[in-house]
Length: 432
Ligand code: UDX
Image (cartoon, rainbow, N blue to C red; front, side, top):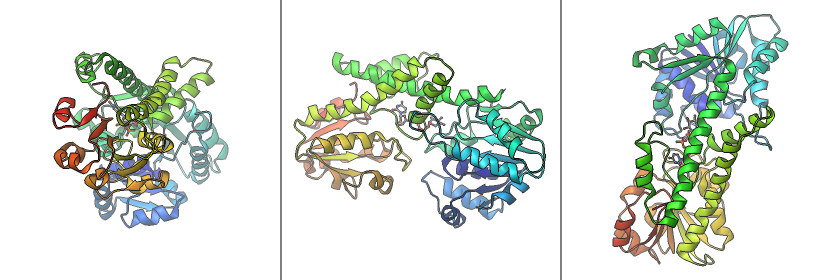
């Protein structure tokens, strides 16, 4: 099948590369000529494990190409995915400017039946809006189907999530479009992936609802962790006991410095905005957002309690990206925590295996180390903010000797409190 993917951000690139891997003919389009030129040379704009290899392989096979020429991509394609950005506006609602711009251009270039699919996370009602917009802007009257096919990819595991999804959601009124989409995802039938075929609106809302629910689990366990801190019991045991109930499930009950990234903060705010727009309450999501903001602040207080007055202190921070296996710094808890430490007069020396170039753009005022040991040298405290695997096997004896004071705030509970205390560290985790 011939496919065009508009927008070569995270979602667009992964979608394009994976559909090419399924044997389709894929053209990825972007307005950013420089980005396209780099992609054509095999240079990835983001860090995602396995993506460079997948892109190179499919480019070589002639199934994947990159261009700025939307017109010919649209003319050749049967299915056009919209994967452009939907950044938040001031009130939290998603800014649909890029989606609508792309839809207008697609409408102008249409030369026959097309399926137009939103992959970007868009507010409920966007599909219908796009249908009207495309009708209005068509130069030549052609039939088309509008589909909502939300992605549930996790950064760092995006390819695996695409190839082995828990489910595929397809929302549309157009029978032909649904049949074409089913065909496109046929390779997943082999692994018995369930499909949810529904209305445009239900598909659109399912993405927001799923992400907000996952965010709820995180804020919930963070509140329980803070309670455990006061009671003096271990939140991991509580989470384990809870998670063994299949109705609850074990995942997303890991306490930490709060959720970050490009999805949860944005989608929770957007869901609240959708609810407001329809005159409904969003009490739970509102609380989830507030708990998350407070959690970041609580982490700063935790460090302050451990170190005492932060004025003039050197704090080593390990891990900057919003989670491991990515260089994504969007809404990373590290940004808020580091700024809080700087405001209190501390200086920060940070290390992250891949996110330092991205981090330097938002946090130019801190020092960056070459490795973990350089980061902790002479430090008054060490703070783990992201749980990269390589931090799990540090030479802790060396760490202790290098530090000025052996104090650790482990905001991801990477280590066992008892063991750390035995090793001579003044150690705090989250809820343990
Ligand atoms: C998320 C969703 O998982 C995915 O389905 C959706 O399509 C996009 O948003 P992603 O943002 O890549 O994916 O990251 P995810 O692994 O879900 O983690 C989000 C944030 O929650 C991270 O900051 C992570 O550290 C935090 N988190 C996650 C916790 O603090 N505790 C947990 O138990 C799980």
